Length: 216
Image (cartoon, rainbow, N blue to C red; front, side):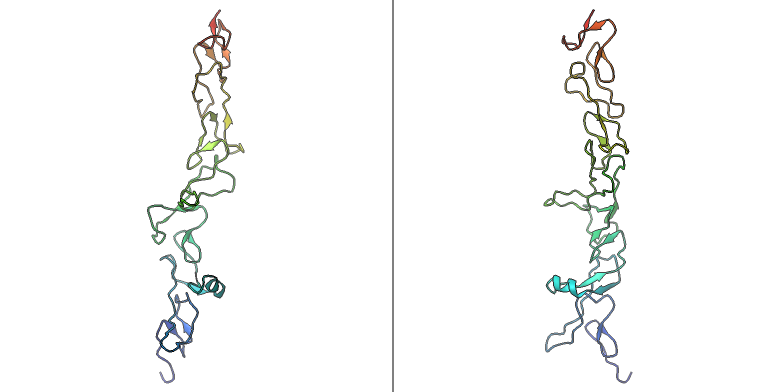
């Protein structure tokens, strides 16, 4: 068409005065001498096909990248769709550009701190582990789904997650762990009770003998 330029370097418009869609990682500039100043393609890690240019980000990056990806898919977020969105974490075996890289957190709500989300990626320097949930004080496990040793009764309503078993050291077996569901302690011979805190009938003297109690 008469008066219309034939555009190169990823530009478009009557006078090639703007960058083509998805080529907004750098500002449009006219060619200068041998410098073509070509428009740069946005890097959205294969999770988006739309982006826009942001001068502040471009300057902050030292002129490296000013493209901001829009409508990131596959549960990703970030300037380059380069992070998993909140409540998702990156599979350590997959690169972020993989469509299945971001997996949903599977934190147990009973043992996880309120409003908290799992760690988004594994980073040795930061000490983070992808998918690990922040647990209440008396809870453990990557999903915060079990009570710590000698605690029991995992409960969403308990701000600490689990209650202490408080096994009686005089009547319970040394180095034993209580039942994490019921809190029942493992008793020495001739002792009984939830906490192994009393002698069986016809036995007495809790803690006075090797077996916890002695026969009457």
